[in-house]
Each structure stands twice: as C-alpha cells, then as structure tokens.
Image: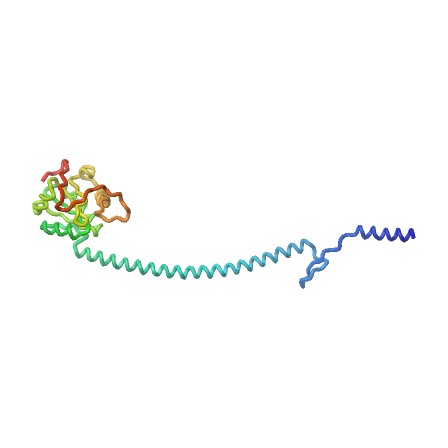
Length: 251
C-alpha cells in the first residue's frame, strides 16, 4: 500500500509538473491544430487584417472616383454657363466699343464750333475739354498727353477747341490762363486743370500722372476704387471757379 501510495503520489507529482496542453490552432482548412503556435496566429491575424483594409481601400477608391467624376460633371456644367456668360459680355463690350468709335470716341478731336462742345458735355458720360492757343508751347504738351489717353480710354471723349473759336464758353467758364482743361461727367464739371502747377510745375510730367488724376476724379473709369477728391460739381454754366495763379500763359 505504501508502494502504491508512493506510486500514486509519484503519478500526481508528474502530472502536476507537466506543461499545459499545446494551444490548438486552425489547420490549412481553417481548423485549429495542436501544432499551430501563438506567433503564427498573430501573423495570420495581421495578414487577414491587411487584406481587409486593402479591400476597404479599394471600395473607398471606387467611391472617390465616382464622387470626383460627378463633381467634374457638375463643374463642367458650371464652367459652360460661365463661358456663355463671358461670351455674351464680350459681345456687348465689342458692340459698345464699335458704337463709341462711330461717335468718335478713341480719338482726340479738334473742334471748331463751340456749340458742338456744349453738345458733347451734355451727351457724353465722361468728356475732357482742352481750351488752347496754337502758339502756346504748354498747350502742345497737353495735346500730346491727351491724345495718348484718348486712344487708351475710349469710354471718355477727349476734345480740344481754340479759345478764339469759343468766346462764349471762354467767358462763361472764366478761362483766363492756358492751358486750361475742364472735365465733365454727366454734364457736370468735376475737374479743372490750369497750367502745370498741380502736375509738379514742370513740362516733363508723365501721361501716367495725368491719367491718375482723371481716374481719381472719375473722368476715366477705373476698376480699382481710387480715393475721390472732394471736388465741387457744377453745371457748365454754373458758379465761377475762380482763376488759379501761376506762371502759365494768360489769355
């Protein structure tokens, strides 16, 4: 009995010292087998997870392509409408420019009849009138700059008239010093340039400087909003401007 007990005790000791049964795992058919180890299972789980993510990414790619194609179709429709709108605007601009050219916009015209000058100030949206004398050198300098501006800004009408051909206007507008350039918008005088004092009192001022002045007062239309000078408007036969003093020629 002692021997059997010992044998029994020995058997229990052996059993207690034995390791846990090997973890079962899936076979090639998917069943777990005793030979499958934990690292192999982890590796298999990582591979399966990677495959799942790739399948999901492919689905997302298909979805993104469909959404992008739909967006491009919508964008093409929008661009088509935009192009049609721009074409119509271009046609209107061309027609408007043609009409202006027919009405002698875009050229610097020398007028001999002061009644025509009065008609221009009332019928043109923007116009610039140069009162000049053919013997005054500074008047010739102004002519050069206004001719350039007339070609560039056809929405504004640029004309000149000799003071001897406009006695009525010269008296009404108190033109006493030459050159004298008066600008009008909707029949109202918005700017009066007498001599070169406001242009640096030099004969070498640039066309750009004169252009900026007219953009500022709104005689030349500008897309950028220039600061408006606080100039008092008046009718062509309105209140007297007064005369500026300078070294320019007196008429």
